[in-house]
Length: 345
Image (cartoon, rainbow, N blue to C red; front, top):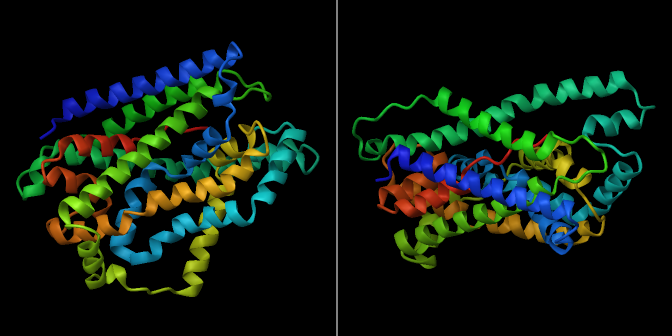
């Protein structure tokens, strides 16, 4: 079993690696090197994965375990926006570039005579709205730490306490330092934050590979193959299609609105866009990324409900399932995938 100290050391190593990637990208941008990578449509598409937060990473499985196929609304909203409304996003990018905007508040105020009062109002609303959202991200990371800090709970034994408040505080401090170093030290509206964008792109690859690895382990290592896991899904309430039209529509619209309006999404989609033609690539590549992210959600949820003790938190099946089978390295890789990225802008 992996100790908490070992996990912290591994996390520090991962953060240091992200710092190194971001620093190298910043240096390359200053020297005018690596434009083929820094300004590639692939990196831009991967940076949009900032939509998939730690809570989405863990919570999608828990959502599926509790509400069945309703979890797909998390991914359908952004996919519909990218596939069917990419021309609207292109117009948004053009407006952002012509008005030299750096935030949602700046964009809205620029459409109404550069009203400072309106910009302040929108900023305050964004801060109030996003604070509990950030709290959820920190909660997801600290909850995942408790799985490693209290391995005995998987077997029904006594647990080793962990101060989640202190853990969340230091995680927030570390991510804030990253953001200050690579995101906010220069407020030039013409500047692109290549270091942070590259770090997000690298992290999105780690996240996708981690989830696929756990999915492959669950389907072929625990369930016995595709046919067996499909039979489990058919026997489970999760496999029952219960589509409430009004509820699904509301959730899809909410996910679509979040994809467009969240400050971090506006930053990477509009402010960090070097070429509006990148949206054409992202219009099909990003929905493909979301499809791959969601591909193993239901199998993990179904197998977790069958194998894990009653009362186990389904949000943490992606960690508790590998740990319960002694797959410590896979669990660490999975924890890396769910480790929260820098809280951008």
